Length: 609
Ligand SMILES: Nc1ncnc2c1ncn2[C@@H]1O[C@H](COP(=O)(O)OP(=O)(O)OP(=O)(O)O)[C@@H](O)[C@H]1O
Ligand SMILES: [Mg+2]
Image (cartoon, rainbow, N blue to C red; front, side, top):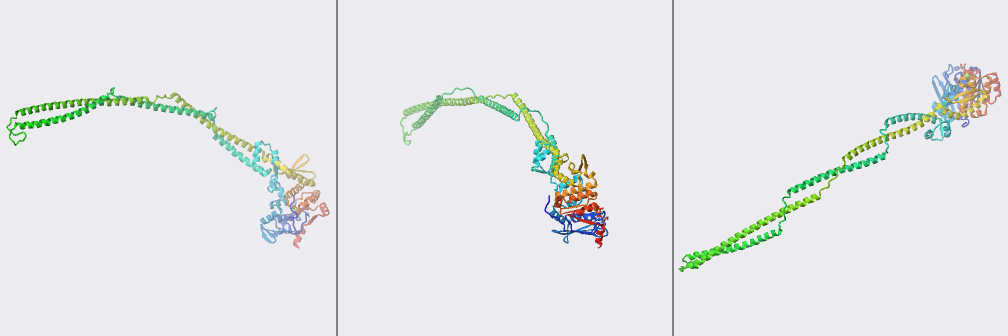
């Protein structure tokens, strides 16, 4: 429990005009006992020392009639610390140089590991006595004097948790060792989380809605049925479409057939093509014959004309061979012959002319026949073509489709609608289920947090159990000291409400702060101060509260101060005692104590001198 030795060794103390002291100086030993009657100035000296160490002045610190009080502490390895208090001002110097209270506190803290508030407590039993039980344990923990740690397994043994609670706690407190601060933090965190989870559960439950219709089929089954129905519906719709398309197409083809039939005309035999060829040949032949005959006619006509000219010549008296010659020959017979010849020619001409007319007539007849046959042929071919087209159309008429059952179509639509409803219901039910799962999960979490809130509640024993575990060694140490100066009592450090000191007198339990006598209380304070000093390694103990003790109690108390443990742990112990006769006698034998006899006159006279 000790840190380095002599860390707070004070070489010399000089006090000037402080409280009831005008001038005082001492070179402190390990144990310093200030002995004097009431009002001699023992407390004044101790208050001055405390002021010197902590910088906390008591009320009305300056000696009456003076304008400042000065306390000087000389530390061998730091130097001289001078504190001066003057009307409301505090000044601190180190080796004559003004410095700050803060830096001095830090310096002392660095050397001693103890803050000035801790020092205040450890030099003032009053400060200790003013702390409530809860404040005391808080103080111990805040100042790290009580390292309250517990092993994970031990913590579990203190709680009554389900595996879920345990798992959560392990997650929140992953270390093997847990301190009380962590537990408090987790407790508060759990309360916060509990509130959040409750709200989330409420919100999720509100969003969750209710199941619509209960569906026995699974989502997959419904999807399957839906798929089948949609397929069938698709087929039916395609059926309706192709039925309608086929119907339209049939109607169109039928219409076309009707139109073609209307154009068909009478049924015709196919004309004899040979007849047409023959007609064509006849026409060609007759044409040739007519051309030939016209040549003949022209020749006859030319011959006739020539003969007629000759005949005319024969009728004149000129020579028919040379019209310049007069001829008186009778030409009658020639004339007659010629006339006959002309007549013959005329007849021939007429005959041939008639023949041409006849041939023309024949040719015309053949033309007519040809035209008639050709027209017949054309009509015949048109009809044939139409007949073929009609036959083709008939042959390729789209088949009559079966109209899908209207009833089935309706039925399918209804079934699909039902499936849609089912599907919607399943989705809705699924979200309800999902939310249910979320709510369940959150409820499980909540339960685990509830458990932590319940089990880690510092008022419900866990804190006490942990504290008790940590305090047990302290309690033992405390009792060891107390036994020496309070043999009748056993002290129990009770942590049910913070930190309570109880006196166990047989079966009776007293709250020490309320029931102990002032003498007993003084001894308890001392042991408590010593305990805190031991925990914090603070090496100066200033104890000014022995007033309530009688001579016997004082002697057993002083006797305890020479225990090797205290001797080792402290650099200085300052104690004030009343100058009882028995005490003086006892002290004269106690060579290891430095006894400072104080008389009020002495302190005041020293000043006057
Ligand atoms: N600021 C002050 N100026 C002058 N005198 C003071 C001042 N403060 C205290 N005194 C007086 O100094 C004297 C010493 O007081 P102190 O409390 O130090 O005595 P004590 O030895 O501790 O007495 P007791 O045994 O009763 O505790 C007292 O008479 C007290 O009234
Ligand atoms: Mg006093």
